[in-house]
Length: 497
Ligand code: G6P
Image (cartoon, helix red, strand yellow):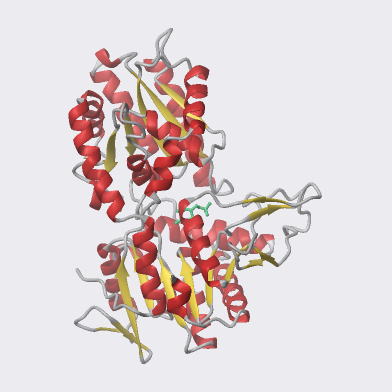
């Protein structure tokens, strides 16, 4: 238990996204509990300690100015999350950021500068003049709110908060500060396109430890420090000496709650959802299903995947009518033009695939946009013969791990095959049992999907067995246990590569 290890030290978790969304639009507040794996897991950790979680009180990220005319979502600044003695909860401390700040900090700097740079995508990078000052200001507000809680230990999440650790370090020099960076860290050659490269690194070096999913991201971070922070020094053990302190970097691959995903896959809700989908789209029981589940983000390689499917059908007319590609899409960061364009591109490619390759009684690709819960999603995983995760770049990608954990819900199920981009963090543990692809290589990608579709049941079982062992070994509990050690300073965490 983390509270044992922390003793009476108080913990504050800080993330851009809040773990609970309260909707106050229609009078009585309604609460949406977290469903995502990470938020649920972190929620449990903070609840154990009775600490504080500081987050942007976004309500709905794409909030409607008509509902919040002053550009602010009307949320109480603090709510208690516990609902019983068994679940004591913690304080959720919400930052009510003004609309302009959100535009420039979240939609601007975080998602038009840092997100593309960390994913090695130069084209979408947009360094508008208002973005960096807003990022600084939002980070300052986060830091101030964190300090209000008088923490002994602070756990920062992700790329929205690179500067806040520096501010908190200045205000509370003795606090233990740990940051987990959930996206890749780029090479120095790429990171240097960021005009604030040095300032961001200095902010992060306010931490005692900075964690990444993979050793190579941690190594890239250290190389960037060596290149862009002249007064920082790397020790032979891989630690960073900075302003009289030692900063450690570490690698710790995040995972999923495998039991929960398996239970979701075996649930009636999963089965009923699949039956509804099969009926709605007229999918016969013997039709092979190829599945994609993505936030509609240009890093996810969805267009590349659709091109590969098109090429596969062009080269193999025998596959006509043999499979249906099911794309579950979630719209995301819609106020950013690159995301709106990507959404339009994906929809257009799906229509084109259907127009060019469809027949009177066969539609090659279907698109599902409705919001579905974890059990319904597990229903899609369970009935897929092939899942394709084809990110151009991805820190970890938990869809790949959830798909693996959802296979074999009953002994009668033949598990599905995972086709996985080499460029996602999850490939390190899952390939070659998952069939690796380079999403940029249309013909290689197409033939790998073809191979997956033709794979016999024995090989599918053997591969999924290997992948399930890997996913269990690096599950969410293993990740949390590692983070607890770092947070409490009970283990040396220097990345070893
Ligand atoms: C990635 C990031 C998270 C982020 C999530 C959803 O996984 O690493 O920090 O919360 O995408 O994106 P959003 O912009 O909707 O929070």
